Length: 302
Image (cartoon, rainbow, N blue to C red; front, top):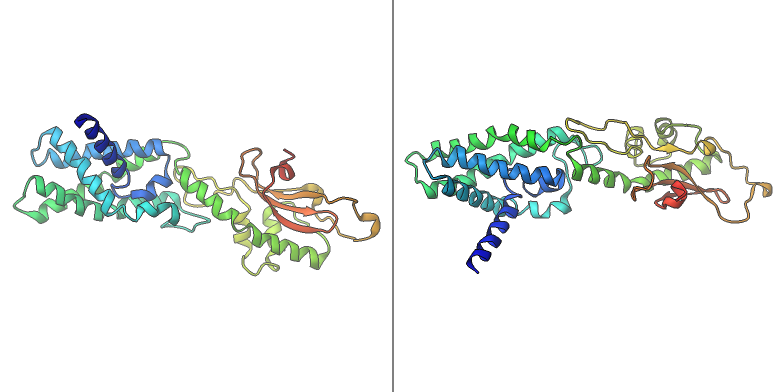
């Protein structure tokens, strides 16, 4: 029973530690979890070596104190991180166009400061130093010095910001109804769909009909985000598709143009097929009603 209780306590500590060490819960939703947990293990080991061994503690005691110190930080500093799924923010850039690399540097560096101060309390309890301020500075230097190591681990995969990329895509998807209203207004005024064959041209045509977005914001929404290791913003590699059969199509409104039954046809769609995240805009060819579309059957014929 004691062994099982000890294992359970260790797992709980490691789970809490995963929210500590500077990035807290926000890091859990930003990076690939496999590398995030590897990062946590390496950071705990480095702190045990650079702090625990420096104050002449045994390896066992150093590692246990390192886990305990990070667990306490996870509870104290990470309390806000527990609500990270409700925050979904980037410290650098915007929700629709984050700057993931610089954000990662800021996240690991800035949160190293409160983390180091709190953890120094635990280390001082184990070995009461004569010069407290010198000791605290040592712990702080260790935290800042290991930031590049942490980044090197977290940025191993080509697309390390999995959580941030998913949230960026979600934040863009929530804005599509504003573009829907702008396109509907355009159709009502011009009795036709825009002439543009690409999203930048489409954005220029819709800008004057949108009360909420300028051209750049519309273009941003109509791109699938791709966040690679050193991305500092949108890479513009994945624009939405525009249905070539509907480009510039006019709405004459005569009886001969009426279709007997309702027919929705995709007009703009995300450049992914069968991912479960398809979305875009569709047009009903009878009434020329525009709507934000999330049905993959209409968007991709599936």
